[in-house]
Length: 349
Image 1 (tube, rainbow, N blue to C red):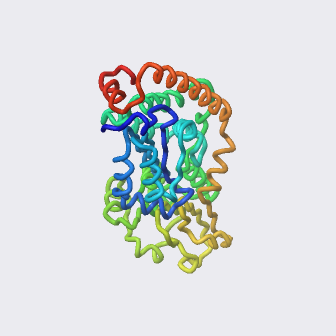
Image 2: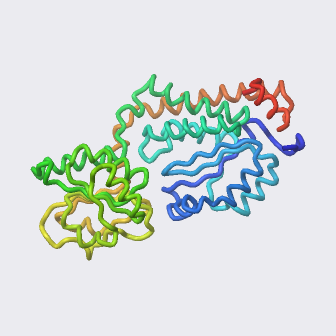
């Protein structure tokens, strides 16, 4: 890992982030996640002194300190031109904002905190972080706790699955449907689909699960004691369900208006896919209540409290990080070799 001092910046100024989010570029995000785009990522990792990879249902972000700024710029142009890119303080601020839930679709949601924590601990164990990213990772774990201790930020936040299930329970109550007569369908077995299925399993007696991955759908149905139907049979079974959750990564509609049952039974439908997988013209049916991600997120974000305090705590943490970084760089030469050696010995971490 030998580089010249002039070729690399190891402090905060050297931090780079390249990433994708499902909300910004759903088709590219799903393609990258499916194929892992290992050759491109390998090219970026080969250029890194240190790195941290954050991978969730909604985002894929690589934070790194490159060995050579010139080489990294070339790799970015050749392989990641359509990805998001941040550098220096901007990258650091973004990471802490992500860790705190400020960048989430539902502001303040807590799942991202757990995901960031797991990523940081994994890369600490793998010794890929180095001093600056280690310090940043520690802050990413600590700041959300500090925010929770000082504010109600995130305390009252309902996750997408909680909001959707609350809507279903209200719908069932107004319809005066007994628990054993209420039938729910879940299309998709990804992160969100599994959470909904497990949450819903304790509240309704009849659940059916389907997915493009039939084996995963069958396995989840068996785990929950639910029913399974093959996705190809979905149109002919739609008349059975009172509530439908569509949580897929399909590039095409899964529910189409022409397939909708021609009866008067009221149904509630949730399109929680990106891109949308339910024909939006279903909302024109008088007996259909159609929710999507944006409408549920809008409901959740109305209850968010303490966001400005979270932003202030992040700004204060960044000032402390700058002071730490300046002190460290006064003490140690700015080379990968020395920083790596000190990190292994626990001196500068």
